[in-house]
Length: 232
Ligand SMILES: [Zn+2]
Image (cartoon, rainbow, N blue to C red):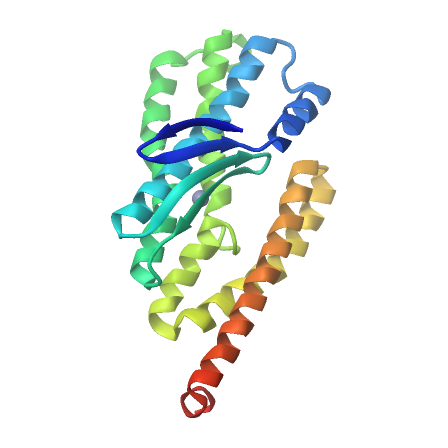
């Protein structure tokens, strides 16, 4: 479902997003105050959207293509194809979390202004909302910067390694880290009982596997193009 178009980028909402709304409703996330519950949920996706715009606009600034952003239950996806150079890829990936970094002082300032010295138990709904948005942004940033491919932290690690060991080996290394960490995240999700983290862990494992396969295919192609160079 197309929501709007900004700076030439179409923003879509995937139908499964509504399933997430239902799950949140079902587990009582919008209680006890449905209005502010919904506002927090929308704020979460507004932050995700700004993050994705960071990726898309950065990708364009280095001459890449980025026309679509899609919001879905696990956050957002900016369909970016930067030029295949490590610097261009690094900037396209890093610009997403950079938006969250820029939001840290903004949300902290709002927190100081609105919440101030009020003790936690006595927050008004708006104070609770501002505090939640501050925490949501910080948590999104922290989780996203874990160096686990395909999270942004893992992709940043890959593009930094790309400078030194080339695209194929950096991707293979990052994908292996993702493959190792996905089951660990899965177990953590089971232990703390977070179904959403469980789904994220499966998604990370699947994407890391696809990344590994892509790296293997790239290595084979390199060997075909230049057998002497590749086997040296
Ligand atoms: Zn991102």
